Amino acid sequence: MTTTSGTGDETPSYSRPGESSATPRHRIEQGEMLPETAYQIVHDETMLDGNARLNLATFVTTWMDESADKIYAESYDKNMIDKDEYPQTAKIEDDCWHMVANLWNVPDAEKTIGTSTIGSSEACMLGGLAFKRRWQHARKAAGKSTDNPNLVMSSAVQVCWEKFCNYFEVEARYVPVSAEHKMLDGFELDKYVDENTIGVVAIMGVTYTGTYEPVDKIATALDAIQAKTGFDVPIHVDGASGAMIAPFVQPELVWDFRLDRVHSISTSGHKYGLVYPGLGWVVWRDKASLPDDLIFNVSYLGGSMPTLALNFSRPGAQVLLQYYLFLRLGMSGYASVQKETRDVALYLSAGVAKIGAFDLWSDGSDIPVFAWQLKPGHTANWNLYHLSDRLRMLGWQVPAYPLPDNLADQTVQRIVVRNGLSMDIAAQLLADIEKETAFLDALESPMPIEGAPPGFHH
Ligand SMILES: *Cc1c(COP(=O)(O)O)cnc(C)c1O
Image 1 (cartoon, rainbow, N blue to C red):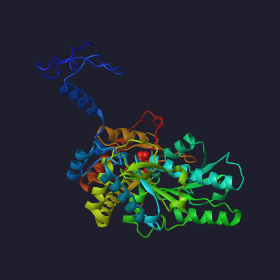
Image 2: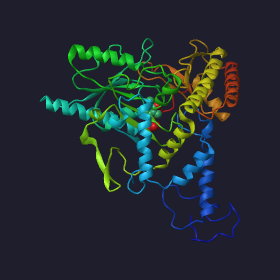
Image 3: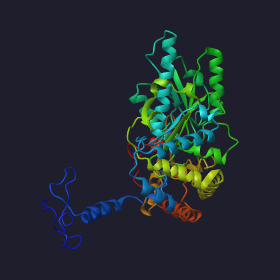
Image 4: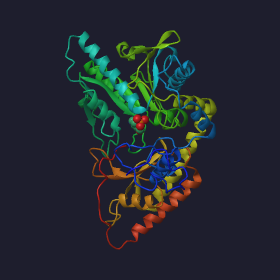
């Protein structure tokens, strides 16, 4: 198409150049557009996105209050890496990771190190890199080969761990989930761990199903392995969701730095930290758990500040939003929000169980996430992908997907309950699940059967 630059401001909406014709998809246009025209195009094209609040697939925050929106609008221009230019934001970041470290019962928050990141993926990569470097140092000191590092984890890990192993050349050793061992629980761990194991990942809040892996049992299994073989294998807890739930909802559960074997913990500030994307946190038990040679120094108030990160520039606003929430909610406010969210999850899972067509895989009592399966033999006419499609027609996004190895022949459907999914909306959702299940059950012939959508990642 052709556009004449800077004209069209007298033309009524939807008949200006740019609006009255299609824009090229993969090439920047030669001419300019009025800001209102460009705005309208961007605004209109994104109307076809799903409604974020009805996205029950995501763990990531889709609602914050007005004061948070105000802070966001005041701070979206701040780059987190400019510590010297924004020393106050840098100090707040430092305060926040210390708060998180204390929340996770670190032995001495003044004697350790942590950082914000763009999300859990970056935080997990940093945790994995610390393991790899620590293992390399130990192997070199002992005059041994550093050729074949491996990382042991459940087959139900989030894709960021596959990425870590791929990008940083570490062998991924997956312990398969099974009907008897639905998650990594220390069972037969000695078959996977050897002298080249840099660490074990424990997941607080398996993304597929929302259940906690028993970090204490994994630690006990590693203690037994050490007693027998001498291999001192550390744990990283991937607490992307659960590390911001367990301290408030299950304070008695011992999964964090109270276990000596836990060297590092990460979480997504943008999941149950309740901040908009993207924000993550990672903290190490002590300085010895993080090899010095991974740390860089950036200029800060005439001196220097230690940093570690994969990215250089990154938005600073999310850190301020996290700080806002720590102040605004405090321990009791977080507990109240997370418990309410869990109550909604328990209400929904009980309702889904009552329909009769489904078996719950989990009920939302760990993190407020639960998954269900079709009861064996319930129907040959439809599957959970059809139910997912039916719900999508009503605006709800409730994904169905296969479980990981060795249960990949089984399909589950999952709901992630977040702050902002009120009891009232949940009641409507449940009514729609009941209605659509009844619709599918009333079918007299089978729906076309499709498999899982390709490339589904959690
Ligand atoms: C979401 C999630 C991740 C990835 O987190 P991002 O913040 O999206 O990068 C990693 N691990 C687990 C267990 C998760 O739930």
